[in-house]
Image (tube, rainbow, N blue to C red; front, side, top):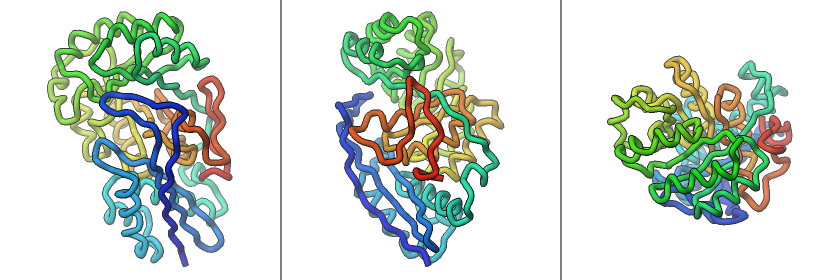
Amino acid sequence: MRKLTCALENWPLKSPFTITGHTVRSMDLLYVTIEQDGCLGRGEGAGVYYLGETGESMLDQARSVTKAVESGIDRLGLRSLLPAGGARNAIDCALWDLEAKCGYTSVWSLLGQAPRPLKTVNTVGIDTPERMAEQARAFGNPNLKVKLDGVDVLARIRAVRAARPEANLMVDVNQGWNFEQLHELAPSFADLGVQMIEQPLPRGEDAELENYDSPLPLCADESCLDTSELAEAARRYQMINIKLDKTGGLTEALELAQGARDQGLELMVGNMIGSSLSMAPAFLIGQYCSYVDLDGPTFLTADRPPGLVYSDGNVLPPSAGLWG
């Protein structure tokens, strides 16, 4: 007999974190456990804020499938009951964790993987050029992702580049530009050695990218939530950022990763900010990725033990006590 437990937890950030049109001071995280035969599977969901998800909406969705989960529904059945989002992500990941523990194995073994350490970016939030340069200098990590909107764009990226001339820079606009801005700015970004631009245009307003020859790779984030949007994204972007809160869990994320690779797209794995329990399932997707953005726990004032181990951009595989 299974028992599903759902709880909403608020996790404060060390300092406010700003991206295009959105500032985060704390995160409402859905924490899910599924107990069966003395084994405990765990999962965590942060939700997708730009689709209107909240902590309360995730909690309501998770509780709505209590009977089905406790009656033994599997991961594929779960996809027919809940839409993609934070609640399905948390339950899906808990089911993966539960299966591994009840089978005295690991999710890595179930997927035929041998885990390797990853190199994650650290993220520079939007601020004045001077403060963004300070953020960049504070990181020992050679890989930085820089958040930008449509204001002081070149001043900000030039300040970061001057502060860290040796760093590998990626830029994330979070839907903050129009096509004219992209066309005007992209050559300067290429000259500054930026490696790629993530989600420059708003979701649903990026059709012009189908005929655009970008001087550097473009990555879809908000424009590719799951496998249903892959075909369109593949016509417009060279890379897909996979986030488990967008896909509704590891099950769909694995399918999206395979589908994107089949279409010759590069992969990135990202996060919506969460504890190491959110990052651990995404770590498996990171094994396939050219770019890794799993620095979510570093924003929080505390982490869920036993947390991932971070050191100058290197992150070790999750321990058995965390997940999987």
